[in-house]
Structure formats: C-alpha cells, structure tokens
Length: 178
Image (cartoon, rainbow, N blue to C red; front, side, top):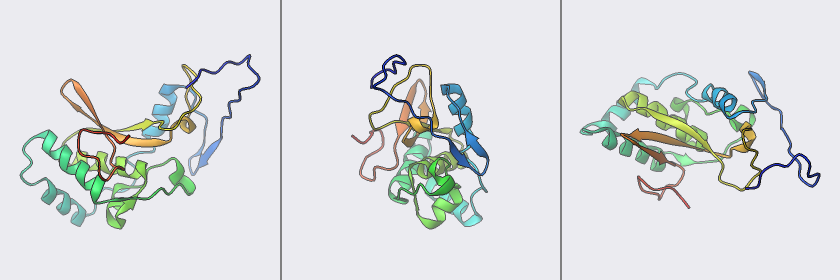
C-alpha cells in the first residue's frame, strides 16, 4: 500500500458517509474507528435457551481455554455458512449472534461476532478484529471504517495473540487463509 500524498493530484481519497439507524459515521483516527466499531459488535439479545444448551454441549469436556476456543472456532467455521450479506445496516454492523446461530449463516462480521459471544458464554475473552485483505490506500495516522473489508476474531493465549478467521471453512485452528 502506498501513502497518501496531498500534493499529488493523481490520487484521490473518498470519505464515504456511512449511515445506519444510529446516524452517519465519520471516524477518521484509528482510535475513533475502534470506538465506533466496538458499538457495532455484541449488539442484540443474548443466545436463546436452546442455543445456550447447544453451546454448553459443545464445550462439555473442554478443560482448557484453548480447547474451548478451538471448539468455538470450529462451530463458527463449519457450522455457520459464510454468506456475504451487506444490505442495509449489515454493511458495517454485525448481526446478533442468536440470529446467526439460528439461521446458520452470516458474513465475516457475523461469524466473528458469534465467536465473541460464544467465548463470553464459555468464559474466554475473544475480540473482533477489523482487517483489510484487499490492497488499498494507506494514510498513516488516519483511518475510516471503509478502510477495512473483513472481520475476524482474536484470542490472547498468554503472550501470544492468536487470530482466527472463521470464514475459511477448510482452514484449521492456528492458521489463516491465504
């Protein structure tokens, strides 16, 4: 990625005005984008009783945090179909984990959000992570939600941060898709 040069008139930076039910977002620093997006994950009702029962069954016998995270990752990776649905508010807001689990499909934000919610139920802290997987403009010190085009989850295992991309149905725990 190349840096933005305001004196080079051959480059352009377009700041889209993303609007949802809460209004427009114009966050332009990494910290502001993080604050903005934090409110777009973990929304909605908690899991339904039968969903909680399913999660508890899934986690039965998992003795370590890593075992729990592996099982959560596998459920999100293979038990929830990846479908890119960016209509309406879903373009930048993760859908509730209960909805994703009940219908059995979701986009990257939905699957990452599901992992975070399942981690909460399991007592393991998982976090949503926004990434850019396609080449794009790099503007040091500035950010915007439109700079990111993918969401994954992260889990801290001691001193190591493990990134988990549940959209790759054939990608085993500990690896990221190409």
